[in-house]
Image (cartoon, rainbow, N blue to C red; front, side, top):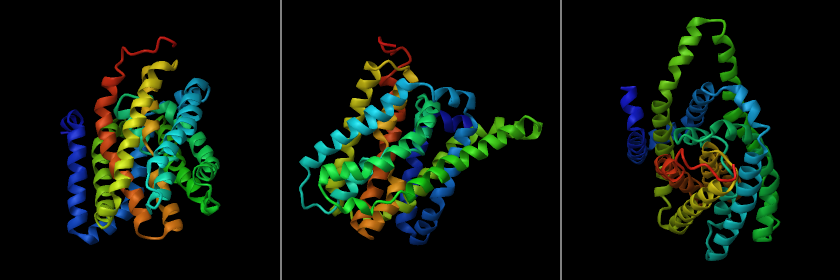
Length: 323
């Protein structure tokens, strides 16, 4: 059964999203329960991901300045702000979703990007080593980028608390637990056997996580669907642009194929789950949170496409000439 799930995983992920959306729309109580289940599901998913990572490789990744510079400095904090500023110029100035759109697009993802990168054969280990840098720099630069683009003092409403909480909950907690289990597996054959079999849970856990997110968030999008047309189109345009630009840079820069694939995923994925409480605090309930939720759903569908598309754009033979 697990082999069948793995072989057709993208199809099963789409089925999970559709099933979750239908449950959320049909059962309001289920939507509330699903919203509370998102964080535990993500923690479990990331725990299983981290459990498969050789942590000596994580240590070595910190010394790879080529990838750190390409993914953090160049793509997420130079190229993405320029693209977002260009998109902002094209947006109607009176749209109420402008601030939430800018907030979510300017902040790179630190959680499930690792899972999707791994599914596409990307270097999720190097990306894991990059997460503290991405989190710290986006805390510092988000108010600066908003001030440059909007010229407003309202950016002072953005506090670092949710960023730090996300780093602890989604990275440090599952990472620490996986290290502890690894240490225990060296002393217990029972724990070691459990560790060896856990990787088979990746696809079911991803299906559960996608279904839970869809059940919790699709009803919120549905309640503001007509108002969100422009925001949804913006998110699609951003994802397409960053996929193309990320793929071009992956071929031009002196990176391995795995790092190139990781570069594409970190360019496209955004920190929507962390941004949701920040946007809710700034805009209250309504169009602001719905905008962030819409970005999550657009991104999840796009990630499923990229899991199949990125290995074809950057096949194993596509090694940069500059490497």
